Length: 374
Image (cartoon, rainbow, N blue to C red):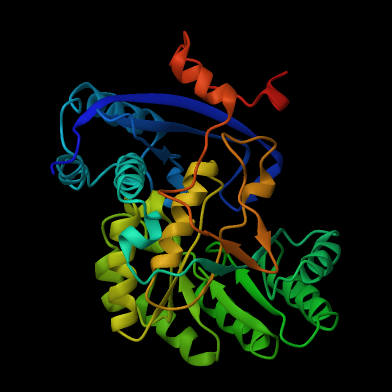
């Protein structure tokens, strides 16, 4: 029996304030904006996808993404899901918009089949994944956050290196003395160092319980990355450097051991899954991370992580940065996130959000959760 064609599509812009500013060497953000895409077929089944552009991570701008999706919804009525996937596969310059369409279509198809999106991507997908705790910057509260995360059952703690190299090494050495055996540090340098600085820092880090180090170099230099990887026992990882159209090329040229993949930066779950499978085939590994997307975007990343070919500890605990969301946040228990027996993404929109779809909603005005709208 043929699948019901698409009946309608809607866009819902949202703005989700952060509980604390998100700070990197490249900027400071106090809120997260995006567009939810809702696709509904002729049988009344709805699928959701999240478009949360973040140019720092290699996506298009919000304006470009919105134009792409507005054009998409004008011509999608009456089409089949496969047609929509083939259409968005051509979107090379708008990965965040492509992620929204692809995730919404996968959500719709999985619901029709009575499967999770993870099992739609891979019939042998896991039902839960290990996740890291996100500790944030190296400020005075770092140790307290680390101890709290350990008590909650996390074994991998992610720290953003936001201070000078000497100070960073000293703080990490101090933190390491307070960690229980088996607790490891996932570090993110956010491209802060030149080659010689990176050599000096990594030599010191090799003595600590480091799980991996992301983006050590200010410029992606395959030769220097190979030198750095040879200095340490833990994986060097690429994140922002992989974003965009050059991911496959960098995967072949860079002798690092780990890829960090964000669906919004690579154009959706299917391309991320293809990159991860290629990485594992070449003796590398991959982890999935979110970028403080909405509850829809985080669920998409979770289902993708569950479908990956190798076990990993993924960076999906970002909901605790949000002062409000478009749905129930995912819960991490004992260092894991669980999918369970859901159909599709397992996403149920907040009542206010559903009313915004059904009521007289101005698509020019972002929806803000009621708890923080005032």
